[in-house]
Length: 165
Image: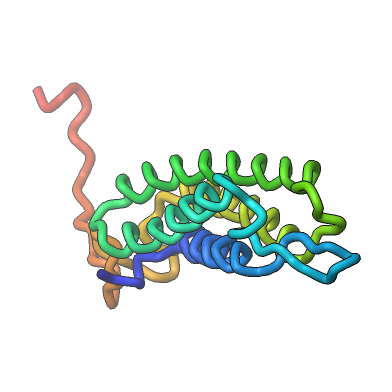
């Protein structure tokens, strides 16, 4: 596992996944009359498991990127997480528009979950578009591990005109 392989997209994706997971433990809805609050786990039936799965998928991208030697596997996972993040954003938007029965007002964690779900979709799309193993000012080898300097490439003359005949 080499954490130096992580690019900005994977780091943002992991941060959004942690925020989405944390939002499930915070109050989403409240009852103004009684002062009771409902966390994401309490207020949601199946949606809480879906959001937890999306958050874990977002976190797994960072692990897969750090473990894999090539960018193909993380990019494939990022494509799936982009779709899952879009679905999670739509599901949380549904809960914003249609709160559960008995909930008078929404709390900050509902908005955090909406922002985090949108962040998962956006960060996964950004990470998927960045296929570089490293930034131009930080040279790496073919597996993404940093190296001290870029190896010199031997300059070879162009072949003669006419194919050398």
